[in-house]
Amino acid sequence: MNLIPIDDPQDPRVAAYLDIRERDLVGRHGRFVAEGKVVLDLLLSTGRFAAESALILENRLAGLQPILRKAPADFPVYVAGGEVMDKIAGFHLHRGILAIGLRGDPAPAEILVESLPRRALAVVLVGISNHDNMGAIFRNAAAFGANAVLLDRTCCDPLYRKAIRVSVGAALKVPFASFADTGTFTATLDRLGFSQFALSPRGTTDIREAERSQRLALYLGTEGEGLPQDLLARLHTVRINMAEGFDSLNVAAASAIALHHFSDR
Image (cartoon, rainbow, N blue to C red; front, side, top):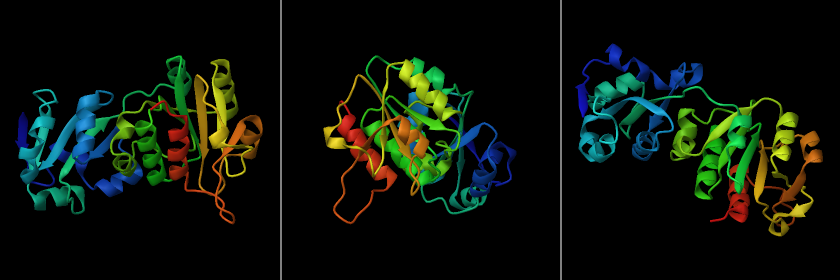
């Protein structure tokens, strides 16, 4: 392994890790931060995103060697003590495990859906703006074998540090892509033979009665407002029945129930 001791928080070699929370807000120009042991393992083992470097707390290094050996021999592994690492990050990092990944050039959602298998389950997100919900939906998508997550341009970033952490690395594993116009994209899915179900508290069909087709796209909307009315009018709507007097579940919890129902697993 290419171990590189760091004893100066201003060392230019770890500039990508400086002031993590502030950089979360302004963006990283084609990079993202992966945090934690499980996420680091997925970053290095799936090969979906290239890893640029890792920054490891010195007392965590021994336990990470089997994971770090998955990286190329020249992969930079920066090693720092607790005080130096906290000054680099700008806050106390109790996990002590960070890595920088490269986003690459994302393909549009239309290209991704063209490549999906004959039997496929896709999750379509419209207006999901909360990173906790985004991460949880990706975790559920991975757990129940969804083939892709497709996002409209108003959704928050699945590669935001918190979203990756909440997803337990699933955002690095489940293929995802963005689309610009919802109406045009629904037409694309229709052309490719996808049945399209929109999850809504006022859906016309109890989800327990909804049958899985060979190719299914499941639409989920933002908290509170849900999916736009014009979209609901175009799609078949399904609901998760609630106890009397209660309206709906959090979108992440609802996604788990719906994906479990439609999953092949």
